[in-house]
Image (cartoon, rainbow, N blue to C red; front, side):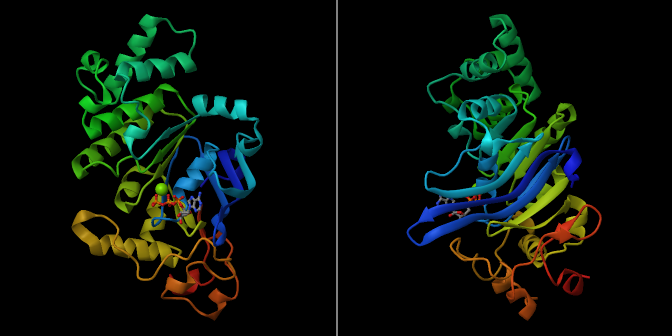
Amino acid sequence: MAAHSDAMVAIRNLRLDARTEQGPAHILRGIDLDFARGRIIGIVGESGSGKSTLVSCLLRLLPNNLDRIEGEILFEGTDLLKLPPAEMNDWRGRKIAMIFQDPMTALNPLFTVGTHLRDILRRRFPQLSRQEIRERSLAMLNKVGISDAPTRLDAYPHQLSGGMRQRIVIAMALLVEPDLLLADEPTTALDATVEAQIVELLDRLRQDFSGSIVFISHHLGLVAELCDDLCVMYGGAIVETGPVAEVLARPRHPYTRALLDCEIEDGQEGRLATIPGEVPSATWTMDACIFASRCVHAAEVCRQGPPALLPAGEGRKAACKRSFEVLP
Ligand SMILES: Nc1ncnc2c1ncn2[C@@H]1O[C@H](COP(=O)(O)OP(=O)(O)OP(=O)(O)O)[C@@H](O)[C@H]1O
Ligand SMILES: [Mg+2]
């Protein structure tokens, strides 16, 4: 993972609480994470670990029941959390783009593909002529692997397959020419064959993409294929980060180990099986290691306060007091 100085985005001690009837829910519990240019970072973790909330913070799309938010999201030195709303809106359309899990959240069923692409280009590059907009739209459709592009420009979202819709959404995100591309489970709604095609597409597109891509997935296999760096989240905290190949070859946190074991056991499907026990409630105050209640290696020391996310080898960090003892 990049050092602070060459990180494009540096998230520092990001804490987010939401108000609930049970008291404050600690959805992000002090996140420290860097994104470097030219790299794809994969974020994995079970459902409820805070992955979507984290990327939503990067767009500053905060929950309605927000109780408090603390820390910094430094984008090339500018704290996104402090930007005036109008400026933040501008950043969303220029520097940061998002691909959602369900393409229909980004597509308006009443508008054609061409209208979607045109609206984005008009907003981002107001000086373009009609002809240039059409040419750029067609070129982008070709780039994301949509054949018969001129006909597709006139199609409505419901006339396209799920895989094709997700390609359109990727095209929309790329037309923005963002520095940061956020993809929150962009393939989960697709079948395995189409999923593989989309991952292949993202892998190909990265060749001429100079920014950084954040790719959220439940599927460690996909992350291993596509990503350079890995961030493993659990219960609103980061438990481990580092170069993806090293982390998966030799995890430094028992939670990463457990996720990997599930994937191996589940074999064919490649989906995560489950780790015994339950994810702690978001209202829990972190006075111990957050994974201790489910960890096969948990000892007294693990219950005596939370571990810090500390260096654990070249470019790696892990939040486990017993890491080197139990995962030699
Ligand atoms: N506005 C909110 N108010 C209260 N709790 C919330 C709110 N938003 C999210 N949560 C809770 O915070 C936790 C993290 O949610 P989040 O959606 O970020 O997880 P996730 O890792 O993206 O999960 P998934 O894999 O299911 O998409 C969950 O327990 C969720 O129920
Ligand atoms: Mg999510």
